[in-house]
Length: 350
Image 1: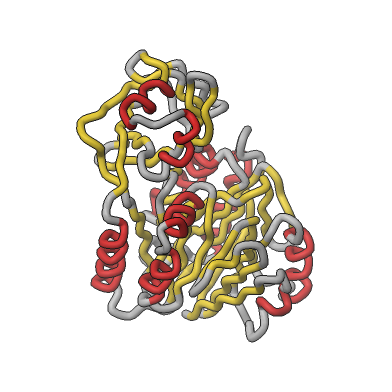
Image 2: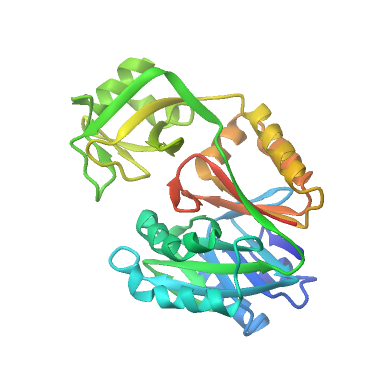
């Protein structure tokens, strides 16, 4: 199979798709101002080709911050569709996914689900994974900006757009990268939470904001940048899901991911991300001596952290060694049934 990446910093879809021939799937990453125009234009340029899209920055060897990026695949069997009403009842549309699984003859060895979500990610992922889990099929994806996604030339709100991609020439495998580890022995029980607004009111019975400030010795104004170095981690079996702080809400902390009463949280700290990225690349190369393509989703906070530390260009160079690397800067990352923050998830095609 082959992966195409085209882009235009000035937002020209014609420029971004120059040289694209006979794709079997297209993924669009646009900007808020031109998203609707790009969705319509893409459908006219490549009618009947399965496609999904969202608002967000894209990258390959450089980051496309405000233009348009296009990732396309050939040598695959693909289907694209959407589950609507993700905040209320996405299971109402689950038959679409079930039918698409049959349509592409999907299998866990050679098929991946890539999704772009408009929000309410946890509900969407739980629903999708009821179909994928019995097939041992992985999912990689992320949250777009602006509360809108597209599928097959149409724009949707309160929805998750997905693509099933079957590699006709080999295997696929999903990976997740975590550049954080537990800080000391800090362990908290969350309470006074607001599930709808992703708010943590208290940690071990004390106001969440005060606890965070006291441990890290930071001012209230510094909390939103300190989360780049010290997010929370939610214990999930043997795994830890990263939770970023979104804003200070009185004595509470609002996050980018839902936290419930009695959830067990740790405080995390930034590790040697340069070494961790090298380890990820080495692990992928060991699993796949021959790589056709890599599609990744990097958190916006990782992008900001790497940019502030003058590492983003080097990061893309490191990942570029895997051959054909491209991806999306997301507002939340998806890995199987997990909705996480400040992480990277990716799919590798043999």
